[in-house]
Length: 301
Length: 301
Image 1 (tube, each protein chain N blue to C red):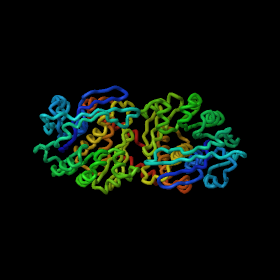
Image 2 (cartoon, rainbow over the protein chains, first blue to last red):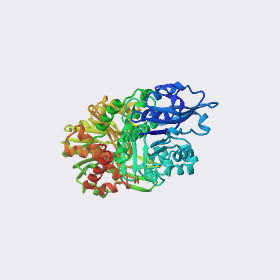
Image 3 (cartoon, one colour):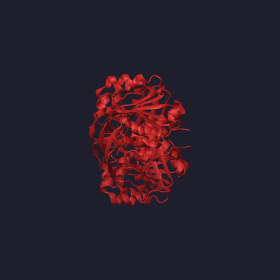
Image 4 (cartoon, rainbow over the protein chains, first blue to last red):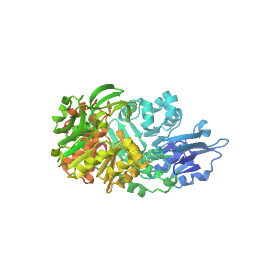
């Protein structure tokens, strides 16, 4: 089933206690697509600048990811993010951001993608997200992400977007900021009053929480011992989750639960190496193996 | 099966966003005993000062908790703790501590308690914990707690204590400080090299993690929406866990997993009201009901 993602395509420079990487491929749409493509074909929509080396997308194009919705814009420069992780590496410290092309007009959905049934609107200005949601009128499942910047500065636009989507995926700090509720179950319930039918709250190494009108589910993170670079972990989680949902074309409570476990497991591979390295190597069999382990790790008869 | 706990008996003053309580009964041994007594008879060992009103222990004595090991020491004053919780209330801010009787010689184990088979050494100076571990030579399961103060200032004494116990229960910050490892699975494995056969790492609202030589288990917290006062939550978790183990006299991996879920659920009641209020009212049936809910919340077929 057709899964479309809109989001950033970035050149990341990352420093962690385990080393560093400079100008490597990153961005929400990249991590999302690689993860989702383990389960379903993906259509990617985004914009890069003329400084972007097109061969960087080769690992994606070889993985049933349709990159024909990626615009290489002449006269523009690619989005760049520089970050640093310290200590338990749960939170990135942003050292430098160059929005570049992301500060210009948004990406365009190619006509061939207009019939997409599953849509993920990765973090960007909520007005742009709303535009995509309205454009993709054939979608039966639209899920979005957001961030502190929009919650604090573009609240009205964000609230309009939330009324147009079926699901919201965000991290615990964002959920608290958006709702003013410190308790995460309470925050999740509050989000349901804003429009979405479900909220998935990501808690990093502590897993994730699903709150919907008919369900409450706690998904653990897969407890990996090697955290090398957490960049892209949240987008990978969302990608695997949406990929699983798109592949099965079922969005009921048990499908959402299974989708979140797929997200947990797939994200666990990403953090074990820099950039997208692990994601380009991981196979559906690898995911299935860790999924069995994760099910055993939470089992209690 | 006989379960003995040594720990503090306190007069707590607590301030949270939901209100405050002054000079109410608290302390690790109190929360632990009330929780454990839901599952097994408890023997309590501790010291209070002559300012302690003995009737404060009435709610314990009526709950198959043997308080004959509580010494009321003439000329001494009871341990007092004053704390404050803010925001998500995951961490207490200590406003004032008066060690009082806890800075004097430790409690004495009554002869009638010497045959105890299950022992929990709540947080206190590790040399005192070691003394109890050596005294209670009939014990087949000894588990201890600790805190930052001892990890930082009494490391050698703590390492001796860890070689004398079977299990260690501590929170995530303490686990990281003790082992120097930010990854919690890694921290748990490191603890196993220090003596204990298992480590239970408490993560507050994010649940807990079991690391042992033959198991790795992630237990969620019961996702309550009402956090009124988290004081005693960790001791309640440990109490229910140890009470369940003592009642079933089995310490294998599945017993430990079940014990931790009992801990999660019992702790969820404590945080919904001030001091020990909820713990004195909760019944085994209440626990069983939330346990069924919790099992459903983590189920993913």
